[in-house]
Image (cartoon, rainbow, N blue to C red; front, side, top):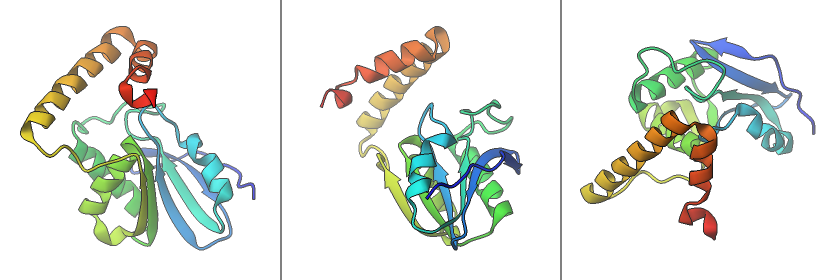
Length: 167
């Protein structure tokens, strides 16, 4: 089935792409780092009976900068939840990939009654030990510095050299 992309919508300050089908299901789908809502098109086309599929530009990854005041994970979760709630207060299915799956975990914890189920790909709830978390913060700070100072192309090149992608 081919589901056309509707016009972009801005709801509660969050920009969405939406697909509308005749089915009853309502989906929120969250893309990964440096991704785009359009990345979900092929998945949406394979859903058996989609109704509304809402794919936000993950804050800080779209045509607009990160909103003022959204300085941490909690503010992004709250902002996404407010926007989704403005569309419909509950009955959502939730899917996320990588960074989007991490955001989905946050949404599941913050607003458990909004979701009927969830599909999370490429995520874990975090690192167990303080030493692992400290090491990751250092790695993340170095990656953020690379991104700021040398740009996205250099960041992606370094990212693709990680051992994770050698398999």
